[in-house]
Amino acid sequence: MTRQDGPLGVQPKQRGHEILAPLRLAGMDGKIKGVLDESTLLFERRDGKGLRIEINSIQRVRHHHIPMMPPSITWLGVITILLAARVLSGSIQLYALAFGTITIFTWLVGRRPTLCIDTKAGDRHILHGGDSLLLRAQMMINRLCDGKTIEEAREGLEELHRHSNYPTVRPLESVQLEAALINNEIVEEALTDENL
Image (cartoon, rainbow, N blue to C red; front, side):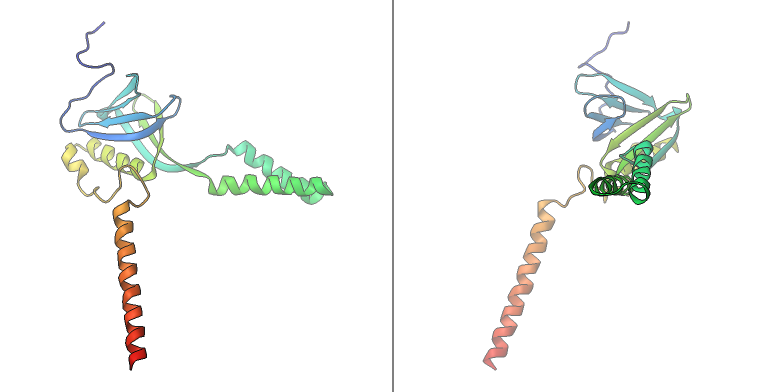
């Protein structure tokens, strides 16, 4: 058994790292924090348990959206619509038609952003989180796999929001201020037109 210095969990070097949070790792309960540095990618829960992946062992990183509903339930929705159209009648026909339509609509629209990390050992680790956070992680991991430093991997990713896809308060305030200025200009023009 090896001795570990510092708090529980595997800790990366404290300089030159990128923190990716909040994420969810498939098969692990609760939210996790990802810590990326030039040699490793660490996923760690609050209690210190985690997973370490060496950057040179990563074979492929894919960012895509998966349906939230399994395909078997979607097929059940298709079969229910066919039954409602051909076999059933009355109020049960309407319920079956509604169930089938909602199921197919949920399958088409309900997609979840996902990042799949495949290693050379044949492991696949699936992460869920915010779309912009996963896209940022994918781009940084791909750049680190190509041999770039952490600073070079960060270049050009400033536009990607780290924690939220929603606008912050400051941009909303500037939009409201511009709208108020435009409204004042319209009122002033209307008053000058009345005075003429």
